[in-house]
Image 1: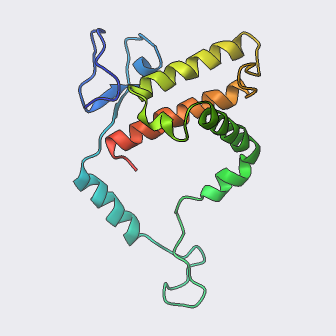
Image 2: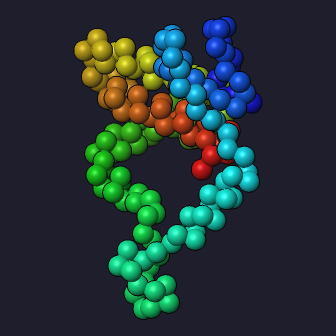
Length: 163
C-alpha cells in the first residue's frame, strides 16, 4: 500500500515505490524512484550481514576484556549532543502539541503523513514570509517544520516496516 495516493500525473507510482521529486511537488520529466517497502527476507539478510561484520573499533577480539563490538554502528549520541538546542526546540513543539491536543495523539491522525507534510509546508510559507516565531504557539517555525517532518517520517516508517 503506498504512503501517498496515486496521483493523476502520467507517471503515477506503483504501490511499492514513490517518485521522490513528485513528493516534493516537482513535475520534471526525470524522476527518481525509491522503494518504500523492503521485504522481510531482505531485512533479515541485511541484519545478518551487519551482525557478521561487528567489530571492535580498536581491533580487539570480541572475547578480550574491554572489547565492544560497536564499529560501524549508529552513533545517536552525536546527533543528540550535536543538535541539543534544535532538538529542545522540537521537544517544545511536542510539548505544546501534547497540551493543546493529547500526548501522542498525532499517531492516530487519519492520513497523517500527508497532513503533516501540509503542516510542514504551511510553516515553510510563514518562514518564507519572514515570520520566524509562530504567534499561536510561541514555537519557532523551523522547529515546527522539523516536527512535522519527523511525524510524517515516523508514520511512514511504521507503515512500511522499514527500520
